[in-house]
Length: 541
Image (cartoon, rainbow, N blue to C red; front, side, top):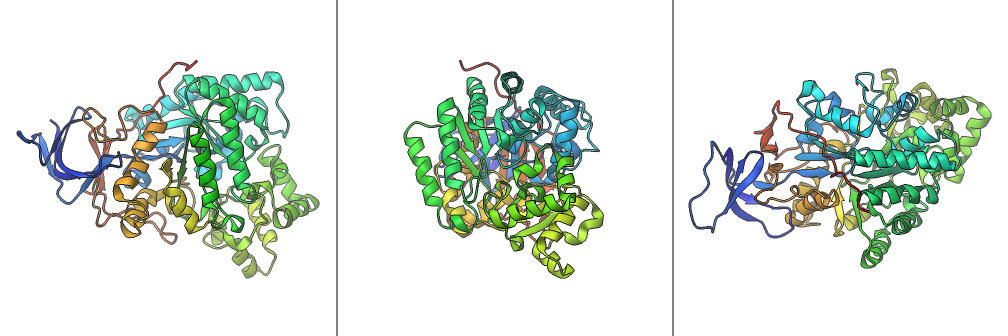
């Protein structure tokens, strides 16, 4: 044996009771589990770690991550390694960097600068999904990446590639091209397809188009992960739309950051859960992820109506610079309720600037748009419009529109999993990027008892592993991969706060991937054990 953790509390990811055991590792896998009640000799190893007082669990799986470039940029990646995350799912919200051609790559880099930076420090040598996964495997001089990563084919990028930025139905040839791009991405290892149906150009897709693409996903035994059309005024209808769409396509459904936000949805989580329970009872294959916080996070430009973003970023900036068109945008944002803001008229005192691309605009960060406007003695829209133009659409926001009772109700559901939705850019990012998983363990499980610790670990490990169809991850079992986290149940907590969003967690001394310590005694090692996790090739039918 390589390593044995002696007298550790095993929380095995199944949701069942924890137990005391010695856990031995060899060749990157769990080689022996010797319970305290078992007869026979205890396992020995080259290295013995006294783990009394610690809990050992499978590594946490972040079902909604925005580390698409961060894994290539930062070998440490402590935002996730320090939390005990051993696998992230990338390609979220319908926008990422493969598959692309030269034009599409330039456009998508510009469109999601607020999420990932402009990528000037990245060697974009790939154009296909397989090429991107290869880039992860060979990153940092061939050593790999900090944590494992799976990928979703981004439907918005696919539409950008085949159709462009126009708000119209695709031609038959364009739809065929999109089907082919999705099929190629899945054949090259993607686990499914994502959409961002409040982001352009993906939001221009009608249901018939999405259903056609989901049939391709189903044929490859993948899953569809939509950021659906509304989390506000039309939230329940939008959830129902995705359930019906995937039922028609015969496709598994995973609902991204499944929240019920804005005043119109206060206390309405039970209605969403009843909808899901009815679909599950009817045989639907559905799961969801959430982050354990009330504010959301996105880009400021995402608040605009979809017509204002048609044609791409330069067309958006031209509209904002034109006084007449800008007034029309303001009317939709402030009075009508734009589709970008989920059909709800914007409340500027809920929109906090969390990051800017231009450092010279740093005075906006940490203030709501309403506050910055008051300091300037002007209307909030004037401030927002100026910032959009000056920062060339690169500003990120925190959107304070969630409800605690909804957050707690949804996280209790049996198909719930954890996802940080963590944007790592900006001076003041959302603390969920650095704190989601210890916040579940410490605040919601230990302190509030919303879930037991065993249930919480199951939500963060075996359930996402089942969605990803990983046969040897997500449980502490002999023969399973030794992707593991050891934490102190009495002290584990998120260090990150809204004031100090990059503070690291406490109470997580050890994290291992393939049996190798990526965090040891609370410190990041130089180990890069992460690799691209590819779905098994081959069509289902």
